[in-house]
Amino acid sequence: ETGVTQSPTHLIKTRGQQVTLRCSSQSGHNTVSWYQQALGQGPQFIFQYYREEENGRGNFPPRFSGLQFPNYSSELNVNALELDDSALYLCASSLDGADTQYFGPGTRLTVL
Amino acid sequence: QQQVKQSPQSLIVQKGGISIINCAYENTAFDYFPWYQQFPGKGPALLIAIRPDVSEKKEGRFTISFNKSAKQFSLHIMDSQPGDSATYFCATHRGSTLGRLYFGRGTQLTVWP
Image (cartoon, rainbow over all chains, first blue to last red; front, side, top):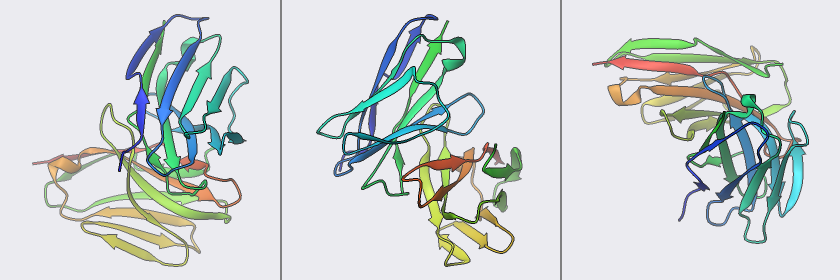
């Protein structure tokens, strides 16, 4: 059984740029949730994708967008990067949107 | 608005001691209470979870105690080991909000050898 994987591991961007982060869900899981974890804080829910549809969104602006593909992998896109977007971005997968979620290792994004 | 309040922010325990981390919530609609362990530079790993129909769940050295009337739950780590040094997060989930977890701010646990 393959766990949740994310790429890239680290990323450095400058303010105003755009970034795409990728996530492959655990084998058999059809739901992916994205979280932002600022330094020293708990993860904050960005949005969730279930069977390729957005299924709930947290308190994040529209410049945070996502996709889920037929194989249930997912992308998180952030446009017009701001300094405060610097964080660890986590994706978590589950089956049928279940509350039991398994997290990937995260992508560390630094915005300069 | 913090949906779940976690304390303490940091905890230092001697090897072999008991580590206790507490969380409190307000919304009685929450129906799933997991604990996650996170090491530096890694993603959170699911440690143990409980649902409100039981008051305690034990897995190895880790125990969750759940008090529904007080709207509190806690993680107890028995015989704490240096390898348990990590940040621990409690979380809650409401069945109607498919898959969204609300996390506490975390507790940084240090176990001295």
